[in-house]
Length: 410
Ligand code: ZN
Image (tube, rainbow, N blue to C red; front, side):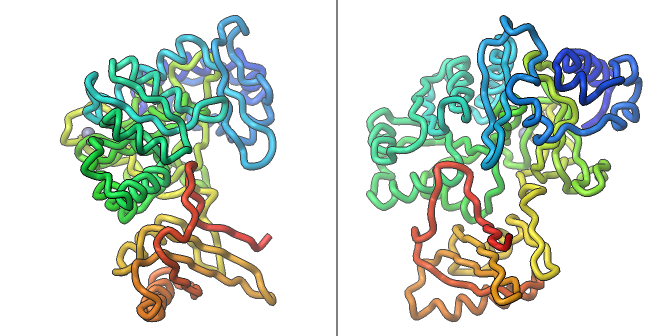
């Protein structure tokens, strides 16, 4: 996004605030707000990596006196030390304000009943969905994840109109609702889906089976949580709340900015955060800036739907695979459903790639479909895979973000 005078001023202020934390005192030692006079000065600052934040465990990121902290959240790592993010009262309020704006962008109104399935607690951010809904004046139904039977009966009895979920959990709910023939009894109109990379096929299935319009909501715990951006009715990228943050898109390998519109990694600098301000934080989410104005007329710039994570790109036998390319490829093959898993193994000195995908076809039709998938992979990705068709529902569904590529080689 554009670096205006006012953005530069906000960045300087944020740097001053960040430098009150033990972490940034060290990480940006010798750099002071007065040194940042231009965009180039800003671009000379080092990135902040998640690994750096882990090193600040437990409260090294805290940039205010402890009595100003009202809450902490934490981002889980699959391995190793967690990252602890302290929030002041204003941070918590700012987050709720951004979230309210997300709901408004999705056309959610005070009369809506908002069914919240993301988790509550230290690691997760269901509370963000709730605070935004309450600030808007809607009715929050704070269910949290799990107990799908109960979720569905409450959805029917309480006539939920807005579903908040990960794509994977929305799909699970949609499938269960369809299986039980409950579609006529549910009143959902909209679904806010936590941003992760998800394919067109999955999107169409959730929208069709639940009868909802979908909105992609973006966020990460390190920067408030979900709710820092969302797509609008026009479904052409996510508007980012640039009064609260500044973002850049960089080449994940060189760290340099990509040309406008090119895909790269999203890097975020907070502009108003008190408890744990961040400078040039590498999200590792791959996306692109969408040029031009949105037909909705909102002044906030847009980024595209996430296409993957820069750390998800996997090199096998000289070919790069990353999940959105696989989504795209499978979306073009008739008979292949949205769910798949890729297993990469090293056997007898060779890398082997097995692709499991779900299909509605009976056993007899599967060999032909597998051949089509194998040929398509060879042609478009340059990789030989062993496709294995399985029945709908055979692959695991998860309440969290779904992992689809498993690299078992190391
Ligand atoms: Zn728009």
